Every structure is written in C-alpha cells, then in structure tokens.
Amino acid sequence: MVSDTDLFKEIRPYRDDEVAGAIARLIADDEFIGAIARYRYAGLFRMGGSLVKGLIRLYLTWRWRRVTSVHQVQLEVARFMEKMISGTTSGVTYSGLEHLSPDTGYLFISNHRDIAMDPAFVNWGLYTHQLHTVRIAIGDNLLRKPCATELMKLNKSFIVKRSAKGPREMMKAFSELSAYLRHSLDEQHSIWIAQKEGRAKDGDDKTDPAILKMFYMEGKRQKIPFSDYIRSLNLVPVSISYEYDPGDVAKARELHAKDTAGAYEKSEFEDIQSIVQGITGQKGRVHVAFGQPVTGDFDNADELAQAVDREIHANYHLFPSNLLAAGQVEGVDDNARREFEHHISQVPDELRDRVLAMYAQPVLNKG
Image (cartoon, rainbow, N blue to C red; front, top):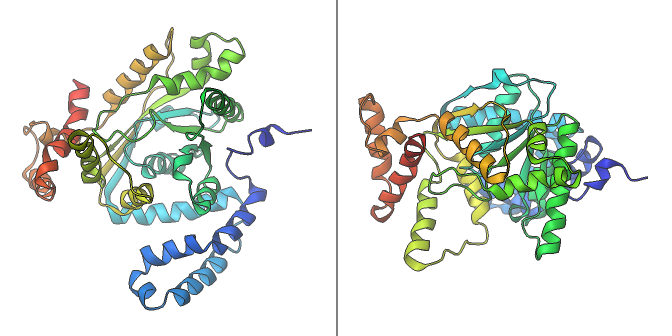
C-alpha cells in the first residue's frame, strides 16, 4: 500500500528518517564543499583548496553528527538566521502574528523580493513567536545542482515543477502540487508560496491569478465551489518590506537590458549569486506583516487576486527609502535622507531612475 506521503515523494520535503542520508550526501558533495570554501574562506582556498575542503568536511561531519531530524536542521538554520539578522539588518519587526493559531495550517501567500530571505523572514517570525514554521514552495529552476535540492528539502522546501513542458505534463505537475498543498494543510502544516513566479523586480507586487487557479485544482477535482474551497485553505496574504534591497541594482540592470536590448540572458549561476547577495547584503530594517485570512466570496481567481493585492499593499510597511523615492520628504529625518542619498549615489547613472521607481512603487500601490 502506498502512503499519502509517498504519493508526493518527488516534490515533498525530507522526513526525519531521510535527514542523516541527505546530510551524508551533502558532506560528500565536492561542489557543495567547494562553494563553502570559495565564499567563506576565499583567501585560504586560493592557497590550498584541497586542504581547506578537507577541513570543512571534517568540521561539518563533527558539527552535524547528531542532526537526525528536520527540527534539528531548523535549529541549525535558526542559529544562522540570528547571525545574519544581527550582521545584515537594522532589526526585523512583525505584525499580525497575534491573529494566527498554533493549531491551524495556513497558506501564506506573500509578495516576492528575495529568493531565500522572504520565506526565511516569515519562518523567523513564526519560530520566535512559538508557531510552527512553514513548508516552502521553491521552483525547480533553482535546484539544478544536487546539493541545492538536498539543502532545500532538508529545510522543509517542496518542489514546484516549473520546468514541466507541454500542456499535459504541466497539468499533471500543477494537479500534484495542488493536492500536496491540500494534504499539507489537512495535516496542519503551513505553506509559504510567492504571489507570482519570479521576484517583483520593479517593486510592483501583483498576484498572478494562475497561482490561485492552481490552488483550486484539487477543489475542482472534488467538485467544491471556488469560494468554499478558497476559504478552506486559510489563505493569509503576507507583506514583506525591506528598507534596502541588496539586489536592487541587479534587478534594475535586468530590466534595463530587456528595455534597451529586448532581452536579458541569465548567467549559469546567477540565481545562486542572487541568493548569496540577498543573504549577505545589507537590508536596513525589515518588516513582515501577516494579514487577515481571506474570507470573502469570490467568483473566480481574478477577483481573489485583486483582494490579495489590496491586503498586501495595505499592509506593506513604508520605510523612508520608499517615501523619499516617491518624493515624499515630509516627516523623514535628516539621517534617513542622507543614508538614502548615499545609497542612491552608489547606483550607476543609467539605472538610477529604475531603482528609484522600484522603491517608490509600494507608495503608489498604497494610493
């Protein structure tokens, strides 16, 4: 007999009994160890790569020797998050967590600015407020390397098969995903998913109705009306606001290339570079706002998308960087203004207007 969990084996996160094997594969993965050596110990790596990699393997074997459950993996992530927050932010704040119940599985749908940090900050808020962390939706385009798949599935990530080709294969992939979301929520496991595929590089947070249609595929299969099924998902819009986006120039450069050259070609490891940039870059203050669960009557995905957008825009926390970019100087103190002017002065001239527009867009969305 095939268990429910095994039905989703291709896409689901690892279970406790799979953790030790995944960690062993990671430590044996030369590409993974090499990446740590290059990013963390660049100088030493240039002098003696093999020795540095050997020492990293020994250290990780010792450090992770007793890690045999997903909970223990997440405690390791929590220690890393603490260091990252103290080193790359001026503080992280939360609102709306008081409305959440520890006994309920929620489908958190959030705006998307950073590949790794968006769900990480959502998880940090839940973890520090004694709530269960989420299962994270991640596109298979980010999992080209085996070590990336191991890392993500160890940290409660499940796979969205964006690479599916052809209508039949895509329908099968999205039906499986929709059923997995339902299965997780029924087991009171919360989910994090972005409101659209890809980050909002222009700062304009808009929900793609196709994501909401995917949510409903399992409801449609069960012949449940759209509104009834959506209410059963405990859908909670989440607004993530960064005072400064470590990837703002890279995003502007991509938009500029598309406008001037008609296309933008990603380099092979650009997604990985974006993840590293988002983790290590300075972010200023960060605020994560959890909205109220969506409870209205909606005839279709387009109406629901508009309601999600209204909630995300209304709850988006505006920092001085947003207000100043939109030309609203009233009430902004001189220190914040000088900091913003310094940040913008570092942006290449041809990209400056795009970066300003990126920071100003949430002000426009609030109306």
